[in-house]
Image 1 (tube, helix red, strand yellow):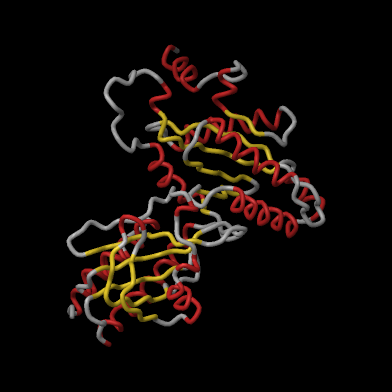
Image 2 (spheres, rainbow, N blue to C red; image 1 turned 90 degrees about the vertical axis):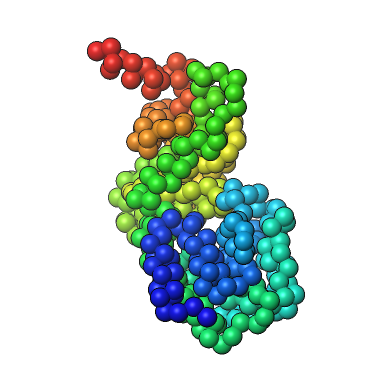
Length: 357
């Protein structure tokens, strides 16, 4: 068994992590090193409120292998259903460890067979429910179980603090302070483009199909003035719920303050992004809000380009929102489409004008 120094070292590595998505990976790696187990994995239950929940592998560490995980943009229907792993369900329901023999850890190409598996619920109050699974050739000792459970308590406390600091208190969406770090990941190229692509073509500069949408609730001041701020807050909470039900589990949803929301949409073409934002606009417009009855939103979106700054991209989407408001509200407009139609000047033209001046 590891000594106190080893445990403190792993605790220090865990609490130094500020990237929520890498926190689970750090936990899996730390427990593997600490116990000398054969494999350690963290699984989270994900899925929209109106769909069956599924297991996402957030970190699978094995001896002599790199830690792997499901990509956050994986198709939800490719993941195993919650009920396919009853021992994980039992651990979450009882809040106690579950012991099993001869179980597969992971799924798909990363699945490995372990002789002894202990499944422990993650002590999480804020964020997605999940479990930690430890696979070993021999059953874990009482001391090893105590070590893991103590580490999980620290992990749970730290994750709750991290989640609370990164989420809007009213809607539980991500807050503005977390936006920049996530955006920078989206605006950086995932790999070098193949040789032969035209260097100057804008379509080869897109950041793997990321789209930034700015959402503004129409006439929200009138809601507060006519119905009071409590009803206004209820509208904000319900719009956030509709966002979670409309967009996919890996799309990033933010509240920027007041009646302004932001979506970082991954994948697809301009038409796909338009379809997603249009679906959200319709869902809001058709929702029967208590007392207010009908609420509408104006949406502007733009493509995230390589090496864009958050402010520049947000400004493009915000210009489209302004145009949507000017044209009558309750509509979705794309910045690039407005530029193509000659309704709006491109950001490159603005930069060029400044340089010439």
